[in-house]
Amino acid sequence: MASEKNFIEEIIDADLADGKMQKIVTRFPPEPNGYLHLGHAKAIALNFGLARAYGGKCNLRFDDTNPLKEDDEYVRAIKDDIKWLGFDWAEERYGSDYFQYMYDKALLLIKKGLAYVDDLSAEQMREYRGTLTSPGKESPYRNRSAEENLELFERMKNGEFEDGSKVLRAKIDMASPNLNMRDPAVFRIVCASHHRTGNAWNIYPMYDFAHPLEDAVECITHSLCTLEFEDHRPLYDWFIEHAETEHVPHQYEFARLNLTNTVMSKRYLKKLVEDGIVSGWDDPRMPTLSGIRRRGYTPAAILDFCDRIGVAKTNSVIDIRLLEHCVREDLNKNAKRIMAVLDPVALTIENYPDGKTEMLAAQDLPDSEQTHEAPFSRHLFIERSDIMEEKPNNKYFRLYVGGEVRLKNAYIIKCERVEKDETGKITHIFCTYDETSKSGGSGASRKVKGTLHWVEKNTAVSAEARLYDYLFTEDGDGNYVLNENCLTVLADIKVEPEILKAQPGERFQFMRQGYFNLDPAAEKEGRLVFGKIVGLKDSYRPPAQ
Image 1 (cartoon, rainbow, N blue to C red):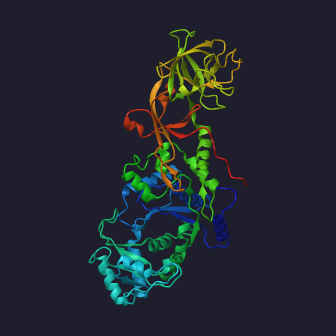
Image 2 (cartoon, one colour; image 1 turned 180 degrees about the horizontal axis):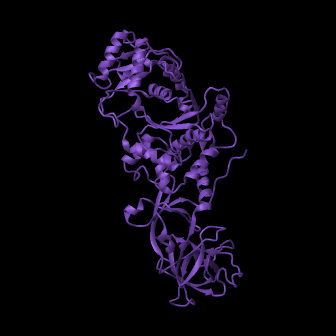
Image 3 (cartoon, rainbow, N blue to C red; image 1 turned 90 degrees about the vertical axis):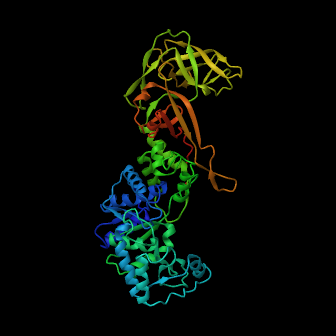
């Protein structure tokens, strides 16, 4: 957690000091109707992080009150994401655990004259609700007797009515300035099989009713929600009071995570998957936790990012480059260095002994004594962008005819001539080398300004590289739209043979190229596929204080 207390920590400190509770209890309550995204990472870090920091506990509660959208696939994925981030839950709970409890509390509200069965259609209810500037009007069914409401509600539970034909509503105030208090729905009819309870229920509680009751049953001390639920807090408190729960939880709101170049709507992301725009929920371009995990983002970087953005009371938009900065910082310390040529062109060192191959020491990490061996011979690949026939300007320090560069961990070479095809494209480079200039040797003191990476031709490993850009980009009106150039595939890159030791998901710095990982899904494709995590260049600059 950040050293400076956020407003929620200040609330917790005050509550503990006042003796309101001995231990804090939080919960993370996702609906299992899709995969978690980066916005959920902030909520996970906050809820589980607070419980860890204060020696309390955090429950994982699946808000599975809508059988039409929920699935066990999403339950499993959510668990995997939380564990990947490094957290575990005290108890695994489900909204469906409390269906009978919620039904009983609904009966209590009916008996107290605080709930009624309404026959208005959804469209009529919207008309009766009123607007922000005009009060609503009462349903003609609002004053049914408790006995009639109890009978109708039981018949709803027994499946005697069609979906949408009736709904149980709380009787509060149709003239309230808060639209959420204008007789909100409590239970609705959904004749569908539930992923846990099967066909046991034909009615299901609404979120605004279920949420506070679930918190009460689990003795949650600090129920943390994003700011869009601030207007729902009076309703939360109303249900807690009138349902007469033994434990009285309290809701607190914090700013949700909004990122530039990112859309985090589960409904929209699900449509991208269903329409085949992306390969799945774990597509590396997706802002889902499974997507960024497959892409190569690290849990440490995600938690560092959440810590840096803090917990605020007002919404704002965070520059996605801050997230990339956190990922880059972590990978720079931990990602093994490997040489890979993404757009290879052949290079021959004509005065290097034909048939000779020597093994050169290549450092795995900066300031590390650990090395691996890289084969070197007269036949190499270098990057096509590292060669020009003529030197374009005095700031160009790569290879050109007549120019010298050092090959990383190897020798200084001089370009003697190049071959080109009929289009003028360079197809082969011919060089000589200074055999006294070997890196680490006595002649290594000779300096040249440019250093290039390379791969030995005969042992080079062929692989595919996928270069990812943002899935969304801004149009002329400032709206986010799909980026048609969000994926570039390089079908035949060349990588030094050390890469054959790589494990799925392992991260590397391809020297001078960026950070890549071995796509963990690539094993199914039967080939080596490396996805770009982030580039080497860090364009993020923190705003001036």
